Length: 113
Length: 113
Image 1: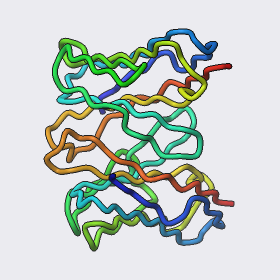
Image 2 (image 1 turned 30 degrees about the vertical axis):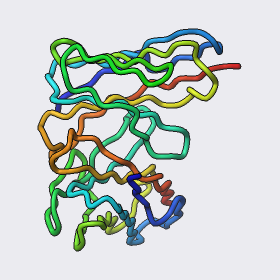
Image 3 (image 1 turned 60 degrees about the vertical axis):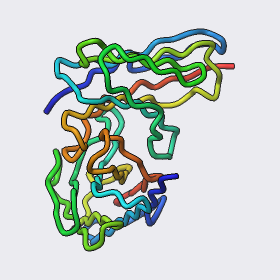
């Protein structure tokens, strides 16, 4: 089983601060996804990155895929209480995803007003 | 919008009961997955299916079985529920020729007493 290590596991910061969450592996992924999950709900897909070095922005969220396609980061600028949730990264090692995804254990993020 | 629905949001069953969890997706996805999610353990893959009547074991298939009689429907069966199967169960689907992106249902919180 391939592993995706996420850090930090927990993060509690004040509204308006910036933060970065990391997702690391020794394996190469064909694509990597980031999800956000709110309590009692299923994960919701935020973004997919495919190309090494790729950067994608979603409003205040910036996602980067490592050059070697083994790691990724999520940076949030000026965090808002609505950003609170569990952030999961997941990697696919085959095109088509028939073998499923490898999930990290997640980063629990709390943004305090 | 992709929609994945699960038959129940909350379920309470007694030890030894047979439990059926149903999942339906409306996007004509070939791949479907069942996960359980527990604190500190993250998402763990129970079973997946890449076609009608096809099934593959995931990382923790013991105590579970699945059925996929129609493309849009994937059922998880607990033959004889046990207390250690108390968990959040999540269903997901994805395209065969996609990037591995999975779309999740809202989850079923199962409690076995």
